[in-house]
Amino acid sequence: MHPGKKAASLAAIKHVEHDSLLGVGSGSTVNIFIELLAQSGIRIEGCVASSVKTAKLLEKHHFRVMDLNLAGQLELYIDGADEVDPQLNLIKGGGGALTREKIVAGASTRFVCIADHTKEVNVLGEFPLPIEVIPMARSFVSREIVRLGADPEYREAPPTDNGNVIVDCYGFNITDPRALEAELNAIPGVVTNGLFARRPADTLIIGHDNGEASTRTAAK
Ligand code: 5RP
Picture 1 (cartoon, rainbow, N blue to C red):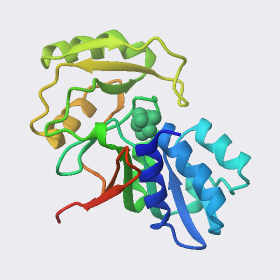
Picture 2 (tube, helix red, strand yellow):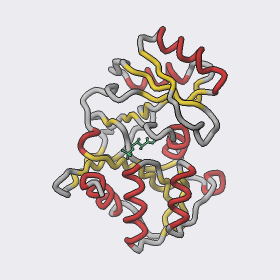
Picture 3 (cartoon, rainbow, N blue to C red):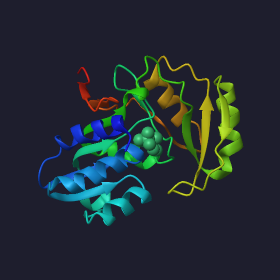
């Protein structure tokens, strides 16, 4: 188990209350969190998963997986990230689950992001920004991304859980994540992009290789 990811996941368990409704993200860090949560003995009323893979892992551990439409507002969302800036804006979607992740994060009162220390950056954008796109709009959206100054690359991967494709964008200079998030989402054919700036994390738990974790909360 990756020591930084494990340290962050262990620290996140302390944020989970008995009988709560929990949103659960996707990725290798979240997978560790799910294993540790199962071992913790904390009673969970229900979980909303941000991907089919996460739902399967939750079910394997006998958590009750709920439809978001039936669950309503969630108390807490736990998810990883590909990059985190000092304001707790994120790039997500390395695993292709960005749209459902953004929905579940939006429906949660508190978002705790768990990551190992390699994910911290001063300015977002070194990690290619994923965009989920309706398949017929792939070329059009890519031309629009070139017009905005970045380099799009079609991700050769199975369709997303929503039946769409991912275009990864290289070279965006993300000095205003909120503005870029809105601009990209306004392109017809874009389902959503991996910038989490309109709804950033509320709390960031960074795990270190020595097994320690540090926690930061966003300034209001
Ligand atoms: C998936 C994500 C993940 O949270 C992100 O890719 C981080 O993954 P990992 O925990 O494996 O480093 O956004 O869409």
